View 1 (cartoon, one colour):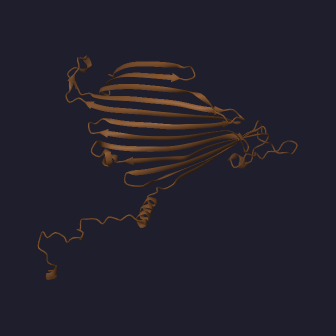
View 2: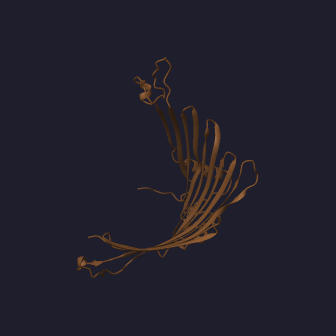
View 3: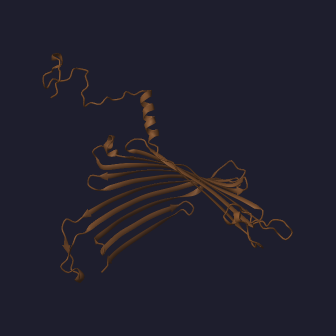
Length: 342
């Protein structure tokens, strides 16, 4: 057997509460805010960084109108654009067109907390072309390209107890495209886009999503600058209803068969607006560009008995106003479909 020696001073009657200031075994010690806590949290985030996926692609293409002899082995396997064949006068044969493309892409991410994740991506592509002594160059770059996702918002602040599930996303994306001759840039186009969105899962099985987008485009060509901005907001509501009882349809090929149906309903409401301005070369003043405003409402209902029998009904209403024509265009579409496969 095992003997335990217990001092009489340490004995406490059952149910005796812990002394004041003492901490129970089940209570975890909370970290007090301070520089060491911040360092530990930063180290935890850095430790959760996912592996970096990298890809490098290089493409080389050359065109010859006619080669009088077999090209070199290095040319055949794509290591060089020189065919290694000489002219009758002893000079090398030059390619009529040479195209080179180099693409680099990187992506990674990290788990900041249990419910917050961030992903990042970088991409760059450079293409050069030589054709009849003309040298052109095009560069496409995507950065920043960030996406922040936050799940479990139904347990935070004002969302607590109201929703079955709630998640939010925030995207930030920037692109740059430059083209010109050699090192001279003749035209450039920059795009910046922010796309916040949030999805609510209500307790009555209704799903609502709110999506917004803010996009700005700036293009410059030979001193002429155009700036445009597009704002859009859309709301999607979805609800699925399953019949509790089976029904019988008076159709010959469904005799003595009972079917249960599912009704899926969706509602989409979207609003878009665009505006812009431009300046001519040599001028520091901008003139406004005509913009547009549009509103679209599109309800849709789909009823399905089985894969062989389903149908849908939709209404699409859109209204667009253009500053260029000072006119409003209204479009209404109504559709009804029924499918019987047997």
